[in-house]
Image 1 (cartoon, rainbow, N blue to C red):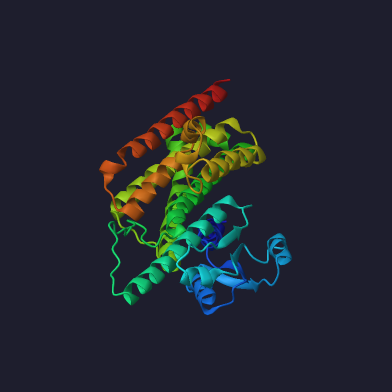
Image 2: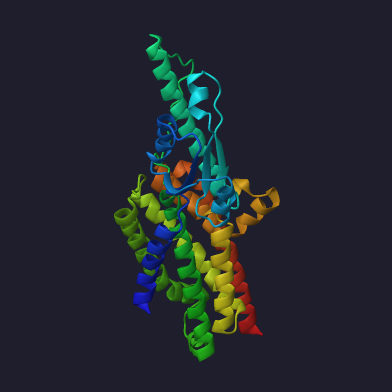
Length: 355
């Protein structure tokens, strides 16, 4: 059981880290070159010179264009007209057409951006070449050079790893603690504990402490393997990261304790714990889907999951390297969340014992 608790999060990290990736590369491009000149070949070769496109098919007729997209032979079709080079050398506007599979809107948008960028770069190169032939120098009034902070390569893995840590920890803490306490009920050993000279706080701390230690080891292993496999470095303070992780685990175990007080069997506890921890952590926490893009009333509902606030803390410490002044409100929310749930759990537990 202990080996599963320690190794399963690493397995999830490897699977999610490699499988859940929003980077769009190796886009299958079909080329319908009706001009078939050196200039037209130079144009589509400029697209595949990057890692974003690879030519999957050359089209020979108009009828073949639709068939290529229907059979998913290509995600994008480049149509170069017959008069491509003639218009270019005649200094007329040249129109090329890109047909993109729009079923996956996010991928289609990214392909469009890649195509626009590659075409603009090709235009710039040709414009500079023509001007240099005439002894002129090109002039750009605004020189645009974007710089991306905190994730300069725009790798989605670096964005997802902190969210993955939060999701794994909340599942381990909530499910393990709730099942552990309910198991005591089913075996009747909870009655022996009740007659012993320990109070409710000592009982809960004693039952949850081992799982907090295990979850902390999980967090350390995930960070180590996240660095080794995905090059995710911790830019912030290690002590602050450990401190906030303990607070999050304390909050997560309070959810498990609350579930154990309202569940009479391990099956019920497991079902509730999975629904409460897994679904909100994936859908409502900002782990994958940006909360800012959700409708306002859904954004309010996202506050029901502590994973949302811990993910913000992790991304702030690991990726941006900020201090406690930037995350104190998220820490306060986690503590409030734990306080409310522990108070409710204590009242429900004592009410059941006195009834």
